[in-house]
Every structure is written in C-alpha cells, then in structure tokens.
Amino acid sequence: MVWRLNVEEHVDPLPGPRAVIGEGPSFDAARDTLWWFDIPSGRLFEHRFADRQTVMHELPFMASALARIDDERQLLCTENGFFIRTIATGELQQHQPLEADDTSTRSNDARTHVSGAFWVSTMHKAAEAECGSIYWYRKGEVRKLFDRLTVPNSICFSPDGERAYFSDTRKSTVYTVALDAETGLPQGEPGIFIEDIQGPDGAVVDSLGNIYIARWGGSRISVFSADGIQVQDIPVPTAQPTCPVFIGHDFGRLATTTASVNRNDETAGSTFVLPGRVKGISDPAVVL
Image (tube, rainbow, N blue to C red; front, side, top):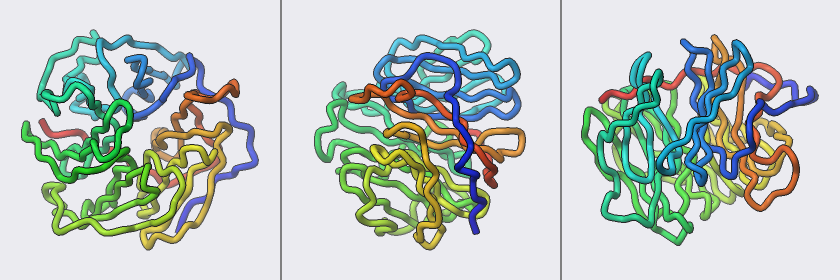
C-alpha cells in the first residue's frame, strides 16, 4: 500500500538561494526545521517552517549529510570526516576521520538506522569509477561495508531495521541486503533489488515499507513497494531531484532537494515541499 500524493497541485520552492548540488535533507521535528546542504559550495541551509525563513551557514569544507545527536547537536558527514556541530553556535568539533588519507574523495549519501548506526557513502570528487565506498558508524567505531562503487546513493532502511537499500547511480542499480536490526550491520551479501533504473539518487522508506527514490535527470521521485514493484511516480518541477525527506509534525509531507548543475531552469537547485500526504517516519538519532 502507498499513500498517494495529489500531484496536480502547484509546487513552489522554499525561499533561499539555489544549490549547485542540494543534498542531505534532514528534518528536525522538535524545531520544525528542515536542514540541507549545497555540497560544492560548502553551505548548510536551515529552513524554519514557523516563520518561513531560510538561513545559510557557511562551512569550512564540503559536507553532504547530517544526523541528529540530541536536541543541541548534529553529526555532519564531510570531505574531512565526521564533525559534531553545535546548533546554537555553529561550532564544529572533529569527531572521527573518514578516508582521511585520500583527499580525492568526499562524503555523499547517508541515513541513520533504527539502531542508531549511521551509514555513509563516499565517492571521488570527479566521480571516477569504483572509487566510492559505504561505511557503518556507531559508538565511535567505523567499518567499511562495501567498496568499488562509483556514485553510492539511495541509502535507506526498512522500518523494522532488518533490511538496507543502496544504489550505484552510475550502474543504474539498487541493491538490498539483510541486516542485524540491533546493530545495523549486514548479514550476508547484497543482492539486486531494482535493475535498469535511470538515475537513482537519494532515497527514504515510509512507515509501510515503500521506498521513495529521487531520479536524477528524471524530474520525479519513484515509489516502489518492498517487493520492488513500482507503484507511483511523483513529479518534481525540475530535472534533477537529489534526495527526498519526510517533514511535518507527523512526517506526513514529502520534500526534496534538487541540483542546478548543468541546468538553466529557474527552479533547478531549489528545495521543494511536494503536495499531498504520505505515511513517513523520522530518522533516529545517531549513537556516538
């Protein structure tokens, strides 16, 4: 079952500058605030729904995703590893290196597992083939899970924590792997979940187990059941959606970041709240 959006409604972008590559949206329900990044410019955006204001925070490096630690702190994934950010002041504290010996790579996609584990992908800054990896982080420990990926994306988890999904955008393939729900670590080897899917980018799973996948170059978010059957396409008013996120006090709305790279339409790179209702769930806090 999927809760369908009313795709006939007009969609306006959230206020704020357009991103070159908008990514890593994360909703803070306690603050009613949506966070996202523009990776190449090293910027973090904060949109407060209460007053409809968007604030831009300059970062000293490229960053692509964050996880909530608690009400006061966030864990940022950056080209220089993991950093703890104090929300009130913006202060950054280095927490853990990630591929610190390789300046040619950066962080890319990420998602928090129900156990508090944080899966993070890396890729070559020029997207050279098979230079990307996916890592697991929890309680200060980092493990490499998968490598020889080019543009690893679509990291998300089933609501019960027993299954992970991820993609290699360059290979037009989404994979799945069984997990230990207590730790978020794989049990066995990944298998193919969806083949020949053009441009799979960021993804998120709703409370019913449906997977929402942004389609880079496809002007849409595609919804698949847990059986891998496509059940809906949700239009996005620009060609390059990058990552969906559930927002609202009940996580009943869907938003998405987009990219403006190689695009000249005026809404490319904007972040949109899409019309209609969904049955979303929150991302758990990461366990340091």
